[in-house]
Image (cartoon, rainbow, N blue to C red):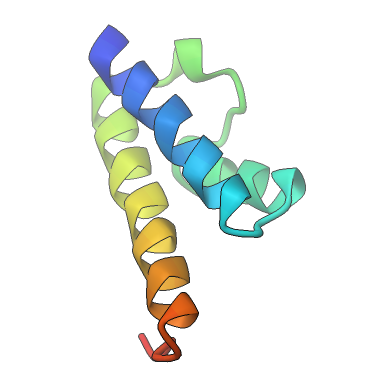
Amino acid sequence: MENQLAKISELKGKVIAAGYHQNQVNDIIREVAENLDLKKITYEQSCELIESLQFYCDFAEKCKKGNCRK
């Protein structure tokens, strides 16, 4: 689970660096985990959160390239 939390932290940083605000990141987390305390989420929630954050990172990267259609 430590690896999961480290990956979540890394992806949160990337999403924020891509221009998302902390409140938006919190909303992404709440969509998946319903709780901002990541120490209390399940392994399954952590996997889903990683997938979701990765989606936002990928989308931001597409937008930088001028192709931000989902």
